[in-house]
Structures are given as structure tokens and as C-alpha cells.
Amino acid sequence: MATRTLPVKRTGKAGSTVFLKTLMAVTGIIFVLFVLAHMYGNLKLFFGEQSFNDYSEGLRTLGEPELPRHGLLTILEIILGVSVVLHIYSAIALWKRAQHARPVRYTVKKRVAASISSKWMRWGGVFLALFIVWHLLEFTLVRINVGSGGQVAGITQNPYELVVHSFQVWWLTVIYLVAMVALFMHLNHGIWSASQTLGWTSTPSARVKAKAIALVVALVVSIGFAICPFFVLVGVIS
Image 1: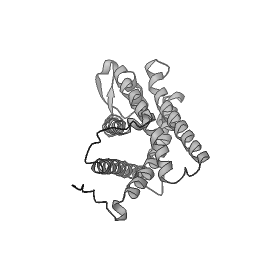
Image 2 (image 1 turned 180 degrees about the vertical axis):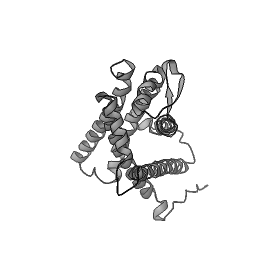
Image 3 (image 1 turned 60 degrees about the vertical axis):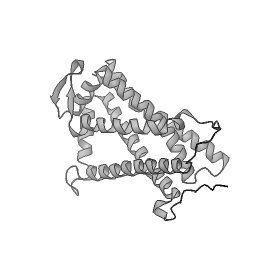
Image 4 (image 1 turned 90 degrees about the vertical axis):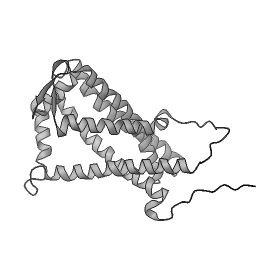
């Protein structure tokens, strides 16, 4: 009888599945904290141009005079950037490991009950990664001011003007809102998975709380982000 060769598992801590899942959970939590803070900042749009621009400028002066202008913000950006890279690396490594663990497809596929967030986690993550790149190019790295009708009106240093002009373009707003749906699904499943990985769901009541927290945080963040571009598009914020 032919024998099937089983995949060799790494025994080193840095290569273990537990380590990768923990790394993914911790970097995911860092990302959650960032989006919560970012969402709070976006809501400053409702208080007018001066309030939003003061908030934007305040980020750049964090840590002064102990640190130079943009010093603390740069440190935080590096931490976030490294966390995102490690998060993506962990996700890819775990996905490849899961694929290699089943070299032969089952003749009969078992139906597994899975939430929409879980089912689309991988592709939602890919979409979010592409969206983040585009978002950084438009609002941070290049700051392209998109005017009426989606025409590029040049580069602007006015954060409020940049955001409002961008979301007055319907197709840019649609892309952003779709990204928020993907973000909701990613956070909802990701926070729950991180809770399991970190051992915060050891009891039935803890599991219920973890699921509730994941859902609430995902809703708050996604809706908090979505209402700003929506109200810009309909003319409430202008």
C-alpha cells in the first residue's frame, strides 16, 4: 500500500503556526487601534475646515519640543507600516501552510458553516491592501486634489480641501464605501480570530463577549469612516 508523505512542520518558534497566528493577532490589534484613532480624526470634518486642519497639523507637532516636527508621527507610521507588512506576511505564510497540509483534494468536500466575513477574509484583505496603497498616494504621499467631475486640480496642502474635493466625486466615494464594507468584514472576523489566538475565549461567556466586541468595533469603525464621504457627497459637508 502506497504511503503518503506528510508535510514537515517547522519546529522553530519563529516558524511555528502558533507564532505566526500570534504575530498576526498582535499586528492586527495595532491596526485596529490605528483605524479607531484615524476614524476619530476623520469625524473632525463635521466641525469645519479650521477644526479638521488644526487636527491634521496637531498630528505633525506631536512630541514637540522633545522631538522634531513630525518626529513622533513618523515613529508611529513606521510601527504601523512594519505591523501591516508582518500581518500580510503571516497571512500568506499561514495560507500556504494550510494549502500544503492538504496535497490531495478530498473526493467528498465537507460543507463547513462559515460567516461571510470569514469566507471573504483573504480576498477582502487583498482589496484592503490595494486600497491602502491608493489611499496613501491620494491623501498622504502625493496629495492629489481631485476637483469637480473627477478632474485633477493639482497638488494641495489643505487637508480639508483635499478630502472634501475627493469625496465630491461619486466614483471615488463609491470605492471608499466598498472598502469600508471590506474593512467591516475584516475587522469582524479578525478581532474574533485574534481573541481566540490570544486565549481570550476560554469560556462560553468569553466567546460571546469576544464576538460582540468584534461586531461592535467593526460596525463603529466602518460606519464612522463611511459617514464622512457620504455626507460630503450629499452636500452636508462642503
